[in-house]
Length: 530
Image (cartoon, rainbow, N blue to C red; front, side, top):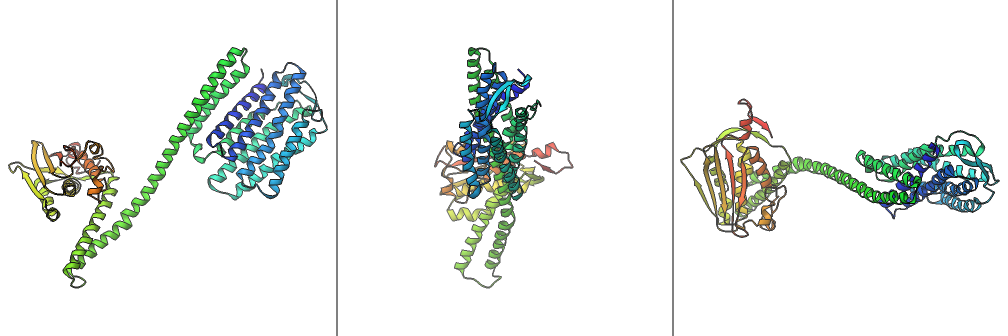
């Protein structure tokens, strides 16, 4: 079997497989359907071409030559229809040309089985049997073929210059693919005029099908990962298809055919899974870009406005703009508190996405805890909660760590949570040394407690408890997440214990007196990015 026959079967197999793949993506899409019909016509044409090459006598070769022309007649009109859909030009003169093309194709197919097309075939060296005498209608057919191929290519070129973005890229692919494919395929016509020139263009027809297939599909399918997966899968399919066509026995054909069907099914599933993965990654990247934009707005504009409002409320309460009544002062204080909470929520969310920078200094952890309790006493009094601090005064609680981060995001966050999630009862803050080199902070409350289901969500980004939002409407779900990041960065541990819903909870923080960042750096390095 020569390369002419092999290239014909290869083109036939790759065309129908790629066409079926496109149709499977969006079966109801009109462009996909017409492109599939185009690949069916390509399959008929090139499969018949291969069969002509292996025909044993003139009668058999003439039969396949006439079957070949069914595909050859349909290819241009299907391609023209496909371009009309892609370019959205299905109206007016072009619509009439499309209808006329289909009418002519039907007439040509009927007449192709008469001597008006092919009169005689003969053995032509390595090409096998080939037409040596054509009928009077043959040149009319050539004019039809040339027009319905050249006209859509011209339309593609014009449209490609007038569009932009992904749509322009799709049109560009179709244009160049059609140019290469039809010029390559047209080299077969040279044999009809007794020009024994090897039709090297056969090999370019496969590229025509492949490139237009990609152009039909969405732009993200040009991902190298998808291309490699598809080309590997298609190569296996085509290899097995050729084995089926060239098998010596029916048994071999059945075995190879069954294997081909299994690999087509598994290959389609594989390609779809890769496409799904690429789509998800692109969606995540798009979402990340949107979040980056939102964070920029929150971090600059919203933060600035809320900060100014807090300053303004403070000045109003202090009488900068004149004396105010006690009732108005109370309202201003409430507005100030709410604005402060919203600002704190925004800052918490923004900081959750940042890498933690530790500014390590030595400070008294006990003093810091007592200051936080004192600062939050108005909130505990407002809710009527009892706060007990139990500290072993015989111990030294000096620690090398980032005082600001531990104060705001760990100590204050845990005590505020205890206040927010304890409708009534008590809060107990216990501080002790768990070992000579570590301290242990425990914040216990008699509040809503933690269910086993909610324990799985604690310390995770956006991890709300099932009913937590009902108790604390200002909860962002990021507080404990950031607290854990900071504790971890110090080489410590944070965890929670609870007997269940409405049975209170206790949060523990264990920290080394010399933070992990200090242990891992030289004595001169006091700042470390974790």
